Each structure stands twice: as structure tokens, then as C-alpha cells.
Length: 269
Image (cartoon, rainbow, N blue to C red; front, top):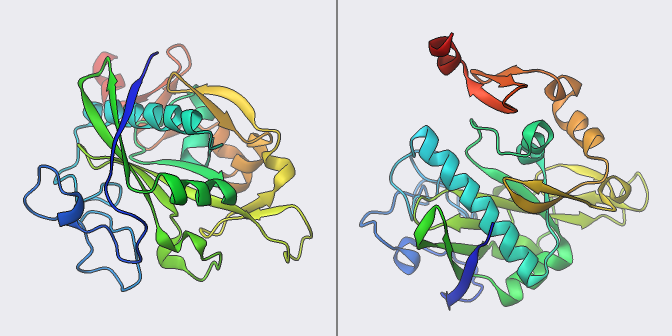
């Protein structure tokens, strides 16, 4: 797989105000984000029609197959970009669970979750915040723009900042789909002692669970996962999530190594 990328503009610098519709708008005439109804102090505003779409760039939920294709391009371009700029990142949460099953995004999952360490987030904010990356791929022959946006509240380490648990996003400016990027921060005062990493969304684990990161593939692109991925997944989802082949109106086909909608299996039976 070859991805061609060019950073073609930096929109604005870091600011305590959110990047509103008029400053980033592309093709939409109306702002479909929920910024008007969100609490003061919240930076990222999900769309009014779906929590995993950015309403500054989209006004509808994509069809099932179209969304799968867009998410695949989203993670491929993200992983390629972060490898190029030298920021270490790894899969977490539902995306790590998708990796466990077949190295792919689970088809009912409409967002992607990754993490970076705190120094990496500071680096992104200093040098790449509001940068637009243009990619051409076999699926996107005309090219597509992806925006890296850092939440200015990333410097607040306090978990009480529940409105801003997402520290940055990698956003598809054509479809509005995005990757949630959270920061893993060392907590020197943790009751469990040294070496504990925490994030503002409430997750925590020892750095020995993370390092050394494992090299792998995800959606056809080089990726990294935590060293003790199984323990992390079982702690978050339970052991059954690693063996249950019937979930969210899909069944896992061992022969095809993919999640198949039950409706499709019924039609083919």
C-alpha cells in the first residue's frame, strides 16, 4: 500500500476558542455540529445527527459499506502521517478489540480510538495543530483532506475536565468521520506507585502493560499495540469479548476472518 501525502496549509494556531464552522468550513452551508447546545468549556462538538461525526464537515451518516471504506482510509492516513512525523501512537479500546479479531475495524464501529504519550501531544500541538494533510490513495484518486486538530485543554491533566477527555482528533473533512486521540500521562502521585499511565477518560494501566509496543498491521497499514494487549482488553471489555462471535447483529466467520451481518448470512443460507 502506498499513500501519497502533502501538508498544504495550517489553518490557525492554538486558541482557547473552538475552531468554529466558518473558520474550517468546506462544502456545507450550515453548521451541523452541536456547539450551540453543548456546555461552555467543551472544545470538540460532535454533530447533531450522530456522535461519531463532525458536523462542521458532514450532514449525514454514511451508508454501511461507504462508512467502512472511509474509516479504512481514515486509519491508514493517520498511521502513515504519525509514522512520518515521528509521533508514537498505538491502538486502544474498540479499535484494539477489532485488531484482536481480524486486524480490522469492527464494522459496527463508527469511530477509531488511539493514544499517544504526553510529550507526543505537546509536540503535535506545537507543530501540527490545525494542519491539513492531503492524501491520494487507490480508493481516493481525487485526493482527500484530513485535519489534525488539538484540543487546547490538552495541558489540563485533571480528570475532572470531563468535557475535554479527547485531546485531539484526526478528521476526514469530506465525511466528518474522525479518530479520537487521547493522551496517556504518567501520574507520579498515583496510589499504586510509579509507572502508572492515566488518561482523562478514566482509563489507567502500568507502563509495563504498554511497553515494549508490538509492531503489527491494522487495516493493511503498519501499526502498534500495547505489549500486554490481552490483559488490557479483558480489563476493559471482559474475557467474553475475546471469544464471543455473536455481537451487534453480526457473526464472526472463521473461514473469511470477518464479521458478517446476520441479515446477509440469512440471505445466503
